[in-house]
Amino acid sequence: MEYPAFRLFDAIRNQLEKFPKPDMLNAKVNGTWKNYSTAEVEKIVNRFSAGLLKSGVSGHALTAESSDKIGIISNNRPEWVFTDLAAQQIGAILTPIYPTTGMAELEFILSDAGVKYMFVSDAALLEKVQSIRDKLPLLQEIFTFEKIEGARHFQELIDLADDHALLEVERIKNTIPQTHTATIIYTSGTSGKPKGVVLSHGNIVSNVYFSKASFPFDDDPAQKALSFLPLNHIFEKMITYVYLFSGISIYYAESLETIGDNLKEIKPDGFTTVPRLLEKVYEKIMAKGNELTGIKRALFFWSVALGTHYDFNNKGSIFYRIKLGIARKLVFSKWREALGGRISFIVTGGAAASEKLLRIFSAAGIPVFEGYGPTENSPVISVNRRAVSMFGTVGLVIEGQEVKLAEDGEIMVKGPSVMQGYYKRPDLTEETLKDGWLYTGDIGVWIDNKYLKITDRKKELFKTSGGKYVAPQPIENKMKESRFIEQIMVVGSERKFVGALIVPSFTAVQDWMQEHNIPFTTRQEAIQNDQVLKVFRETVDRYNENFNHVEQIKKFELLPNEWSVDTGEMTPKLSMKRKVIMEKHRDAIERIYA
Image (tube, rainbow, N blue to C red):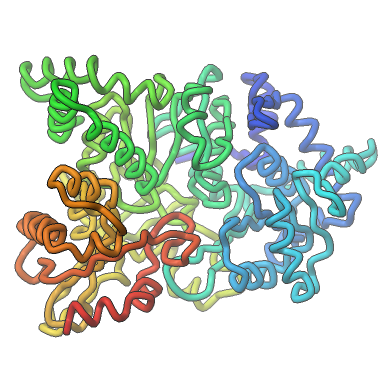
């Protein structure tokens, strides 16, 4: 199937011709929304490209190795996209990095990519990069998006633009082929050194086009989207270009803490997220429900219970639909209002989402669609559609992709969005790309011969000492349906039985303790309380019934602190770093098997 011969930066010209907007990109500045029109974005980006050229950034080398690399470490903001587009237009390659990246990993990425110019958003990130600058001989300049005394502001580059440089930008733009590398995205994964995934314009544009056609995203300049997933992750980067090519205005959340306020302010039509953030929204809603009393409380939990039976493909009996209509009017309407009142789609990816949570949100008239794809595929392989969805799966394969399962169930994909390879790592590329097929490392099955369901990560499967294989993800996902379980990691490799490390939802634990007249003092004391332990044992036993004897959790340890990116147990896309967690909680694991 064909896709347009666009480069990513053609999104500006495409929007200017089809649906020029007053609010192409938008962000809060000193408490007020600042809007950038399509025409303004074009002018800023062209002058930014010209300034980079005049500063010596190479716009002529069309190979990943010889093209200049531009690094960026910043929160989501219009300047992030300006930098991305400005670099692309002159053939430079953007290397984006998570703001939460640790120092050793940051040094490795900047050194491995050979970053020449660096862009940072604020003083803290400037200090972070400057602290390792003497270890980066190729790094020539650091620019900031916020004005910081003693630092070079990115406006300096824009101000360098002159007519000759602007003409040169136009000349270079016309010479850049779709096969040219647009970005190198380093994936930290759950262990080992980061790998630089090399993606061309064609890789990402094809994924944009086929995702746009499959979901679908219609051209609609009246729509708005809220962006808060890190732009350096390929999912948010790709979806940004879906929005730009569709004429959808992008508003950047101020921070993860202000998402609720920003949703109410801008009333977006949709956003993308990861399951962990959806879980936190759900937990807040449930906490408010627990504060209710009398008929309001009964109605709230009656509505939630109704939601657990919702199905896209089976709308239920007339009686169920009448009840759901009442629940939507009296309870769920408030949920929609809290999200701005206009949400028509939420797309989640990056990790498995709870089927129960997806059902409840969708029943509430807040449709959540789960999708799937690795960075190496730019990224989307499959997604549930607005018209065709099945809970518990990651949907239908999008157009333009060929997918098959290996004998061991590993998902393999072939198509125009498969990466060019790993930067400077032909050994890893050969392991992952074979005869044009990308081996994803994910295990899957087909449901009804068309829906793809992820069952586990190939590397996360483990074998008990009895020789039985266990897939931890389905067990963890099921257990997290309990209101008492915030996070869980299943263990048991080369052990006699399956165990688990559990981080309780302390909001739910505290509520339960108050209901039963048990004083809540500290988290540590709560997880040692015999009655609390009994509740968790009963919870685990109840969910164990969904699994065979070998897969059932026999013993567990409760932990007092949540795993996070800051404390090192989670990747920036909020996946567990299993090896790190096992090492940090070695004593707890030994107690399980004592």
